Structure formats: structure tokens, C-alpha cells
Image (cartoon, rainbow over all chains, first blue to last red; front, side, top):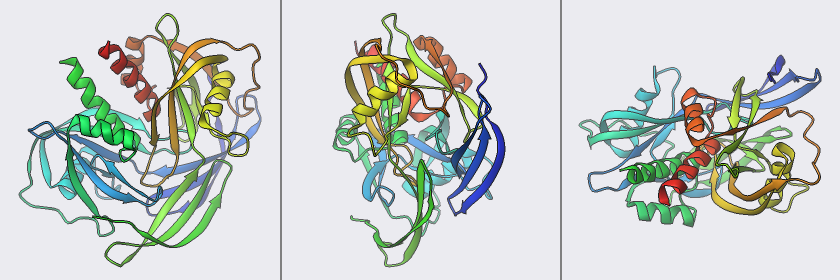
Length: 183
Length: 183
């Protein structure tokens, strides 16, 4: 059955630097109207990076929406004005956040982070053939982070402890586990 | 190192039914100020359900933020006024969306869906000991969905096809794969 909602009206509520918010009026399959609250976002990339000695790379940073410190995979927003592709964003973030370059980016998964209220699309890559960058890009001036390397056992421990606590990062750890178990 | 940001000011931009939006002014570790755009959400639950004949249960529905139809695990928002725990929400959604009850809910993972701009927290459960409900709860009047059962191979096919396209649902599929490979 087709449950498509017909868009009747869209009102911009908020225009931010990272998100916009819209209130839509839609017609439901039964003919009634409903309101939909929608966050618009330009999308983001995230990177699974495994070192030569089998450790996974994380960045530790303050996340103001959660008011806590997290361990996450290197990641960043796609800059719509500057970047043609998610791969470009991935290469930039790999340089900015962890000072690495990759020979290859293998796409692991593409997914929406919260399809009930947001259109943010995430591109998760496995960065392969890592080496230090020759020329370091400047870091964002409102971004402060430390880089950590964890074994798989340590990463699983940090999921239990709640320091690794977001979907893209847990997915990256699980993907690594799946790869190891498929050998 | 501690990169905590000091909250200087918070302004409510939007008050919706599902989300609120706030603009915060914070003091960064280097003493400068920055703006943070934050979506507040009451959290949600999602359920991995495997049938007796080894199929996974999905709901197919229209997602207006993406303007497309998706296949997702049964899921729903925590209603702050009514519900004491995510487990209560999980049991209600299991009844409302797929007309099942579970003997046990095993917590698979707890994670933030998009920690850069939202505080939405997701509780993912494996619903075990499934049976049809004796008494069906009324469904939300703005929610229209169909229920599907897929084998693991079919689910993997739908990830490739892009109909399964959100983090919680891909995580549920991967968790199922991890369980099968650990036997």
C-alpha cells in the first residue's frame, strides 16, 4: 500500500548555521491533515580507521547537546558550498581531526540518523592505507578534541561504560567485529 | 584534557510536539564564545523482533522528512507524561505497530542518534518470546504502516536497495548477524 503524505504547506521556523527547522502541513492517506516538525541538515561523514597494530581511532570531545564528553569516530558535516562529494568531506575530516590520509575509502553504509524528525544523511567509510598527512589543514576554531587509539576489547568496554554512545560510532565498532568474525 | 563548554545562555527558539529547538551560547576552552544549535527530543525505543521461522519484523511507512517510504524496525517515541521507562514504551509500540507481546526485552544498545545537534537517546531491544497480543492498543491516528517479515538475506538486500536506510534498523540487522556468527 502507498502511504505517501501530500505536502500542503511548509513554513521555515528557524534558520541556523548547522540546521534549519521547518513545520510542514501534510495530507494523510485518510484525507486528514497533520503537522510534521522537520530538521534539515546538510549531511555528514564518519570514518572507521584501524591502525597497523589493530587499534581503532577515536576522537574525544565535548558534546554540548548531551552536556558530556564522548568518544566518537572521526566525523564531520558536509559543507554544501565547498564540497562536491562526501568523499571530499571524509578526506578533509581525516586530515583535520586525526592528521591522516587514506589510500582508499570503502563505503560501509549510508543511513539517516533520525528519520522521524530529521533528514541528516550519514556516509560511513572504512579508511584504508593510512599514513600521516604531509600538510595539516587548520582545525575548526570552535572544535577541541583529543585523539585516542583503542583495541576492540577496549572499545567494547567504552560502549558499556557509555563514553562510546552514538549510533555511527557503535556501528563502526560492530562493522569491525563483523569483519573479524567473517575471516 | 577537559574540553567542557560553559553554558552562558540558552534561548528557546521553537516549541513543537516532538522537538524543541534551543540556541545556546557557550564559553569554549580557549575563553571565546560560540553558538550551539540544539534539538531537544524525549527519546525513543526500537525493537529487533525475530520470528520462530527466523525472519525479522519490519514496518513500512512514509517518512516525510525524507519524502520517501522506508522499512524500519518497530519503534516509537517515549511519551514523557505517560511512561516511566523505555521498556514500557517498547511494550506499547510492539503492541501498537506489530500486535505482539514479548516475554523478555533484552537491551542491545543505548545510543544518541545525532550527538552533534540533538539529544535524542535511542534504546534498542531484542524482543524475545513473541506471541500475538490478547488486546490490541489503538494506533496513532497520524501513523500509517504495513508489517513485513524478511529473512536475513532479504534484509541485507533491502539495505543495498536503500529501503532499509536508518541507523537503528541497520544496527538491528548487524546485531542479528553478529549473534548468528558468534554461535
